[in-house]
Every structure is written in C-alpha cells, then in structure tokens.
Amino acid sequence: MPMTVKAAEMPQFEAGTATDPSDPESREHQPARSVSAFSLAFSMPVVVWQALFFLLPLAFLLVLTLWTVQSFRLIPDLSAANWARVYGTGFFWDAYLRTFALATSSAVLVSTIAFPLTYCIAFHLSANAQRLAVLLLVTPFFTSYLVRVYTWQAFLADEGLINSALAILGLGPLTMLNNVGGIFIGYATLCLPLVVLLQLMSMANVDRSLVEAAHNLCCSPLRTVFAVVIPASRVGLVLGALFCFILTFGDFVSPTYLGGGNPPTLGILITDFTKAGNQWPRAAVVAVTMVITLLVIAFAAVRFAYKTRRSAL
Amino acid sequence: MSLASRGKWPRLALMLYAILAYGFLFAPIAASFVFSLNADRFPTLPLSGFSFAWYEAILSDRAVWDALLNSLRVAFLTAILSTTFGFGAAYTDYRYNFFGKGAYLALALLPPTVPVLVLGLAMLAFLSRISLSGELYSVVIAHSVLATPFAMAIIRLRLSQIDPAIEGAAWNLGASPWRAMRYVILPFARPAIISALFLTMAVSFDEYAMAWFVSGLNETVPVRVLSILQGSVSPEINAIGSIVFTISIALVVLAQVIYTRNQNSQNRRMSH
Image (cartoon, rainbow over all chains, first blue to last red; front, top):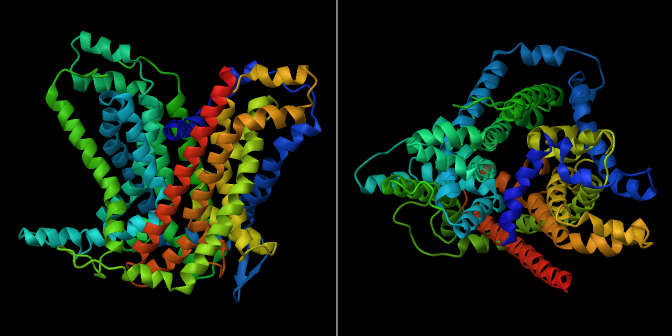
C-alpha cells in the first residue's frame, strides 16, 4: 500500500526543508556546471508562476492597505487611514485576542488529544496495522471539511442527534452548538489527522533502544513517555502544534457554523469586510496582521523544534 | 513490537482511546452518508424512513450540475498545471545545487502555510486589478498556486529513490539531457506524476475559500455547498458530500492501483 508511505512522508519532506542544506543525497549529485536551456526549462516555470500569482498578490495586499474606498471604488492612495481605522477599534483587538487564544488552545488541546493516539500507533501496532491506521488518517483529507462541519451541526444542535439520544435516556438537553465547545469540535475535525501524522513521523523514528533502556532501568511507563519519548519526538510535536495553530488561526468555517459567528474571529472579519462591506483595504489590514503573526509564530516554533537538544533528563 | 508490553491495562486503555479517536474522525463522514438517505430534514433519533429524495433534489438542480461541471474543469486544469510546475521544481531540487536554493524551495513550498482566506483576498484584489478575476480560470490560477507544493512533494520523494548514477550514465553514453529526461527520468517518475495529478485534482475539488473569493458567478461544488450552508439547513449537502467523497476516494484508489502496477512492472524490469 504505497499510499500510506506517501502520505506519511509528505509532511516529513515539507518539514525537512527547513533544515536540510546538508541533505546527504543532494551532495551526491554533481552541481550543474552551467546554466543551460535544459535546467531553465525545468526550474523557471514554477518560479515565474509562484512569483506572479503568489508573491505579487501578497505584496499587493500590503499596497492595498494604503488605498482608499470612495463610493464603492478602490482609489490608489498612500493613506494610513485603514490601519488607524482597524487598529483603532476595540472589536478588532477583541477579535485578534479571541482568534489567538482559540488557535493557541486548540494547538495545545488537539496536540494533547493526538499524543496518546500517535503513541498507540507508533508503539502498540504491528506494521500492517500501522499502515491501515495511517491510511484511515489520510481518508478525511478527501472529504469536504464543509460537509463534515455541517454534519456536526446535526449532531450538536439543541434538537440534534446527541440531544435526542440523551432525551431517550431522560437526560439533557445540552447546549453544544454556537459556543466555544462547538468551535473546538470543528477545529479537532480539521486538524487531528494532520497533527497525528506529523507527530507520527517523529515518533516512528524514536530509537527503540532508548525506550528499552528506560524500561530496564525500571523507569515507569509514564516517566519513560515524559523523559524519553516526548523529548525524542519534539520536532513532530512542535510541528503538529504549529500546523494546528496555522490552520485554526485562519479558519472561518468552524467559528461561523459551529461557533455561531459572534463574536467574530479574524477570518470572519475578513469575509465580512470583503463580501458584505466591500472594504477590501480594511480586510487587507486584517490579512497582513494575520500573516505577520503567523510568520513570527512559525519562526519561533521552527527554531524551538530544531534547536540543538540539551540533556533531557 | 510490544515494547511497552508490561502492564496489560494501559495497553487496553490506549487501544480503546484510539478507537474512540477514530470514531470521532469518522462519525461525521459516516453520518453524512446515513443522513443523505434519511427522509428527515432534521435528523433525530430514532431515524425516520429511507429516502432518495435528497439525491433526486440535487440531480434535478441545475445549479448543482453547473457547479459539478465547473469543479471538474477547474480540477482537471489545476492538476495539469500544478503537476507540471511541481515536477520542474522537484527535478530542480533533485538535480541541481545553486545559490538561493533555499529561497527557491520556500517559494515552491510555502503557499499551503498561508491561510486560504488571506490567499483568497490577495488573489481577488490582485486578479481583479489585471482583469483576471471572476472567471473559471481565476480559480485555476489560485488552485494551481496552492496545489503545486503537493505535486512537488510527491514527485520529489519518488526522484529520491532513483539511482543517481543512472542519469549520469545516460549522459556519458551520449544522450542529451533532454533524451535522458525522456527515457530515464520521466518513465521512472511516472507513477508519482500520476499520483500527483490525482492528488492535486482532489485538493482543487475540495477547496472552497479561494474559489469563493475569485470565482465570481462561476460556482464550484464547495462554493455551492457554502451558499447552501449560508441559507437554510438542507440535507442536500449530505447528498452532495457523499457523491463528492465517492468520486474523491475513487480517484485516490485509481491513482494507487496505477502507482502500484507501474512500480511492480518497473521493479520487475529492473531486476532482469
């Protein structure tokens, strides 16, 4: 089943690029002696395309924050008014803090929920069962997140599936929709498979003899986990949490359809400013703020993940 | 591999936990199938009768058919573009060392780490400046930016399995780099290229945020779902979701079958 291999290694590859100037295998090739039409034909299309349709739009977003809107038309300008307007409102900062807090707690929460599952897959399953477990983790990527969120609504609604089951038992009803709990269920739906896969790529490589040694030294299983397994799989744990943060920080679907949409998150602000208000420059201010926040967080997390390990014990 | 084989209870508890976690992941997927065949608009326990009403509703809905056609067009073109770009980037990373390679790889791999809403807004603003927004090809442009890194990652993995001496041998025997590419690298990478085509197609088929921003009046399936969500509750979403899921999984399985068959026949050829 090569699919499992592919899926398990894909994040590994992405993650690896952060540190692999010394990739052993690329040193084996002879570096190109000269720039040829051949090498350009393969290397340049992606550069041109991503520069034109990835970098340039992002750069334009920065310019757009300085433009103004007059009677629904964008006017090129050099005005700080949008920044002042957005940063001057309390509800922007409320939304920022709320989004940041939601993303941080979902990174912690989903990583914590994922860890025992990853541990179980890495240490308690046979090779075949592991492949099946990974295959099952990949399956949700091929279902629509929107449809899954919609289905959670049917489970969690006041007259939904769970409450009608509780009613049969004479319990409830519980309010599970349009609150923070609903948002976290959506976030876990979005992130859990990816977080487990990222954790797994590190934990699968933890030196088994270290774990054995800890056992032989009569280290309790729980202490072995904290003293050996967690430090040794730090890269995967941190990258898992980071991707969970990135995904949830930018998500508007769960906060809207499971969280009720009010008070808004930054993602909801962007859709509101763009779709309803026709205030693209203000949406751009929010978007640029999000990108800067994510850059800082990602940089810090990657540094922390790959810093040289000190003695863990 | 029972390293932690001391203590039966912790192991059992872990297994139970794993089953619950998988249950959580698959509950909405399975329920969506069930609800799509359920007569009720609001599913409650016990479930009411079996019905194809929601499938009939979407099959007779012109907007859903248009969206499906749009999605297929976009996914097809996105797959071709992003696999082409992804192959070029993967081959460049595999074959060459050069100044600025880190920046090159970052440019090729970063798009999925930027929130799709931000990318969508950036695309909408930029493309409408150069009069390229609001059309189906706008969605293709946006999706190909997002999907290229996935294609690159898969093809790069495959290239790292190639014996680096083979291409050099072809060059030494007088093959031009183009011929070596045609007769050595491309055949070897073919299964990964096919996988990349299907995976990028699936990425495009599921993407809703960028498509919602730049597609204008040309709705794709996820955008259609989003607008149904914004309106009223309708189990039509479950029916659409079930059909889309079946198509996606069929594509993935197909890609895997082709991949495995190619790899097997290639391994046989190499061992002769």
